[in-house]
Image 1 (cartoon, rainbow, N blue to C red):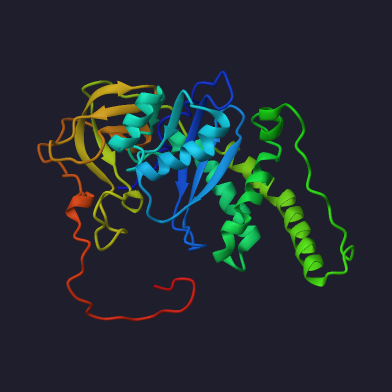
Image 2 (cartoon, rainbow, N blue to C red; image 1 turned 60 degrees about the horizontal axis):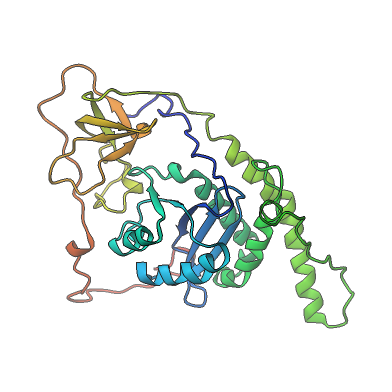
Length: 336
């Protein structure tokens, strides 16, 4: 049944870094419209200054290609970080990625299962970046790569209430340079005049709307949460949101899908708001979960345990079609 209580677990801030680009976080924005063979944005953020880099990637990339990009785009500018906070993307938990940063002496800190809020700073930035690009390319979304550098500059030179200054100033110790304002009609070249006028209007729109949107998202972090603790050995139900599960086969109707599984016994507490559960040996999901995904089991645990949904790995999927049975084309935003 539906849960009516506020989500468990108050916000647990990560430790404050001592030096710039010493502790970073990273995430991906995926499923963007193809733009010059790129469909992914890799967001890398310095957790102290909030300075960020936005790097476009092709749809298919590996841990090896991402490591090469990291060395050329991040390491050459800021050196080797002491720690990296990320979700449990298959690239970040790959043996190649783990071994590389083990050699470099970097600690990898992963979020608990199905809880992207662990990396909330980058999640908020992702939404801001999507807003930036939407303002720039709402009419021509396939051109988002052309405006990515401008979006990065605007983000890093915008005031952040969390640090009381712009990320640019926090990193370099001086006020950021401003883009020269343009007065319509200054140039006699019609196409250039139109382009610069449109850019000035877009930047003004961002100044008026996007900053306020970012502040609202940050302020809502704890507005609907309450504290909850469980004890080792306690039995709890586990909430798996079907529409957030990339590793779970989706059933035909998400409306009627199970919302809780278990109960399962808590093996140990991992930090203030994460717990390790005793999952079945056949389970293929990480056993550590955020407290917001747990619900206490009242009374004696049932002997009948609601089994976890079927999961898959890349090895389980046959990517070679046997036959094409039909074809159709649908025009519009949901074309397929």
